[in-house]
Image (cartoon, rainbow, N blue to C red; front, side, top):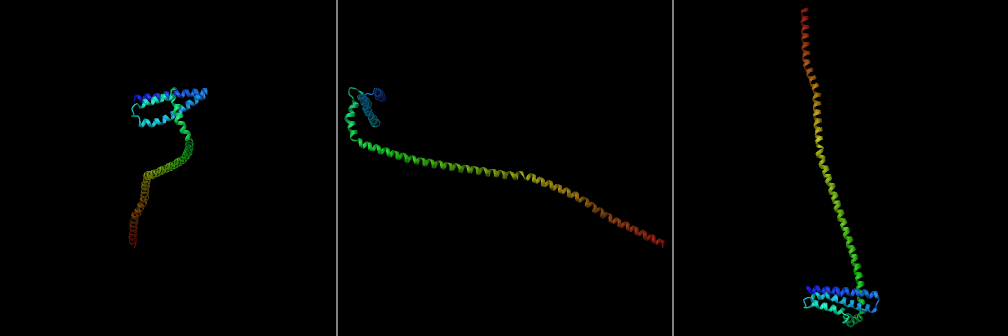
Length: 226
């Protein structure tokens, strides 16, 4: 663990920051030799960082692995060994110069394919997003219409439920009141007629009796006169 931390610090400070500062000075002074020196170093360091990602996974168990990494970075930077320029001139430059055309063609094809793939996936992504937006809008509209329908039916049900409960009471009361008024008026209207008829019925026998008595009196008076 300690060796890993030390190796990371060495690579960060002496392998990255120190060459970056001297590259800045080379750009500032516009020295061609310094340009070439630090460009060769950055090419070798890029290859080293690429290999390091795999070796850290598969060779970290190797004894003195991190110490070897520290020594390699020091060998690259040392002005006495000139490891970066040596590796570049012996291995990297001949390999890249012999396969430069193939690498350029592969890069061009990769750019074209990546551009086409990016456009294709971009179109598919836009189509998926548009369809998702349309379906979401349709679902939202359907849910809203169902909600409005449910609210309207509920309102109708409440109105239907309230109208019978509110209307029967006054209707019944009015019917009862009208019935009582009608019954009272009927009784009041029939009582006088009944009394008149009874009086007439009582008066008729009396008149007949009076007539009979008068007739009997007239008969008796006529007999006496004879």
